[in-house]
Length: 359
Image (cartoon, rainbow, N blue to C red; front, side, top):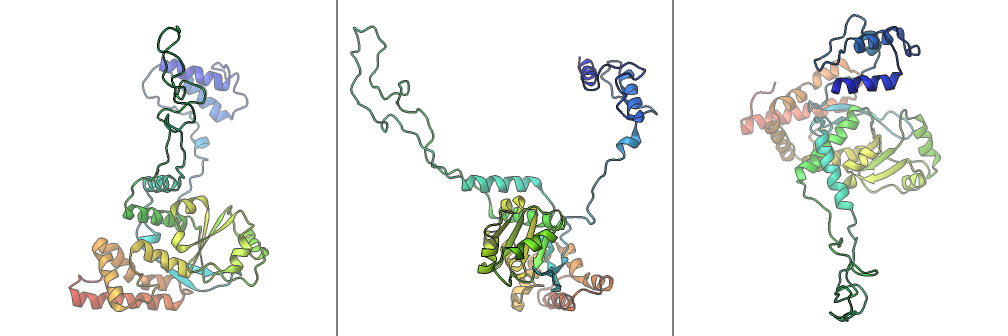
């Protein structure tokens, strides 16, 4: 029965045809021969069908498969150029690998989005019970002698204008989610945008004027972009707020308000240096040893925590800055000086706390 059903579906899709190919004149020759061969060899069997030499392999091989240019989720620090609204070169910045290069997990994104939407649901829906609905409380007619059904009130759910039984009442729709899962969801969303090449880092969000054309001109230069989310680390600049308030495809958020759902709604993410550092601190719980000027004890503490969680990947990444410098000479020297400082702090911690050898 299953085989006959499949054959009937193919006939309805391509029309009636015979072994000579009638009804398939609009299809390519290779595909037509392949379909005829598949249907003629089907024989209403439930076994797995093996295509013969006439199967159109070349036709199926034309489908383009897009693959990323690097392996995602290796916890490797990323070096990204820094610019501004005038497309000026402002050097480079290192993105922490444990925040911007984590493995992509759709299930975590799904759970976090459900948590966000459930938490923001208003939950003010309300219906009136029998004690709240307006109406008299007397018995409508006598219990006996009328020939009618017995009733004790006109405010029951069976009467017009009566109450609602088991109706909704105001409540919170929020569901519980651990803080670690919420932070992981934000890391995954940031890593996805970084892997797509849709993460742009600005030196600052300063604009010469509050004119909307400043934002429109930059937006027109961006490729394959529909909606842009601008994330500012500190207070939002007044000129930037005025320039974007009447653009439906550009939205602004402070770094403290960055969330997974907003990142998914916008295909391009524009962040300032300050916003990147604050998001890294927020998701990691501590400061980053490369882009932030923290005390030696704080930096050593971060290095120790990272080493305990991922001993091999983080150590190799820190030691690999010399390789990056050899392959990419235009990179800003201050980035590698900061990386060398991180290695020195790691060596000092190794002597003090008994860490293993640096690879």
